[in-house]
Image 1 (cartoon, helix red, strand yellow):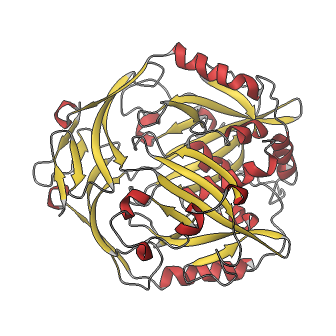
Image 2 (cartoon, one colour):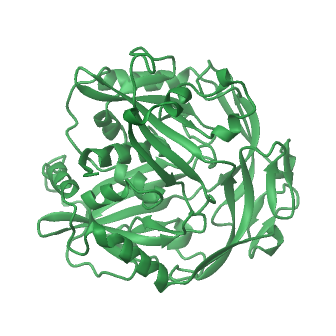
Length: 465
């Protein structure tokens, strides 16, 4: 309940406390040099296994008789159905197609991605979890304190409690540091979002198995390692109110918001849900649904075991992309202020036509059969950049609870006028990281890939690498 006492609209000391945590790379529980041993111990302490299975061997999942949609018998979790996407606007740099059919996941419930923070010895520490997801390339990655769908934390699976959920729901949770609803992958989810939360604990917090306290500086160091910090952690970290919101930029904040509004109105996007069985060019077999060209992604089924999860064993469908992705920001300094080139991306599952994405976001395999002129804009500038211009280059996995072995090479590349002009083409704009941080405090401005890259940009500021 509100206290009915006037208080400051912003927590004045918060940015300074976050900055201090980002500057500290030795935590009260373990140093970063001991993290690998801790993660290895957690891997040994539990049994993890994932096997591909035919669709018929999934427990509780089936294809609907009249639509072919893949559904769970409880009516909870998510469904896989068909989508028809069309776009009649001006060219937007996303590739040669503006009309296609595809499978898509529909999950209307909003989950919680939450990180609990607490001060030790005057330094904020973040409670992170070693969590197994069936789609992770290495199974175990560093996840938020809580990473749960509503079906999970309301125990639709009839399993155990979600640990620490009481700090994020109900009247006794701690002080809110960040709380914003953000979109998920717009290419694979239909209008799905999760609640991204950072909560500061009040009082003692028990430390459970598979959890550890890390400073933001330690997490930032881990963001320079392949496949360690999972996607859900990255999107929550991007929502932290870091740095000073003031400062100069090529576009004022009002001009930037106007540009985004203009991008949303200059495209006419239509999405139509269709039965999975009626998707042209997609074929269903015993163990896979695939596009007839072998491109894009497959729908597969797995059996998973993880004895430390709320349910020790389960089966489920997953999307498996064909090939690894490229996610990249081109960056330039203007007047001594770093800017990154954002792209107003149209994705079929987004709620409001476009969200800001990285400069380049694509899977090269899907463009192998088309002329280079039809590849995404600026892809060539990223892929041909020399080592002297690459400022960040790490492989991160996408959401392992829904996607199998989905990896993207994440890059920050220093550009010049020849690579990325001061006046970019339609659909692109130069913005500062501080402007992205301001936008991400609100819903539906940055897509999940841009939020990953924002977390990486913040990690670059304090990395000792």
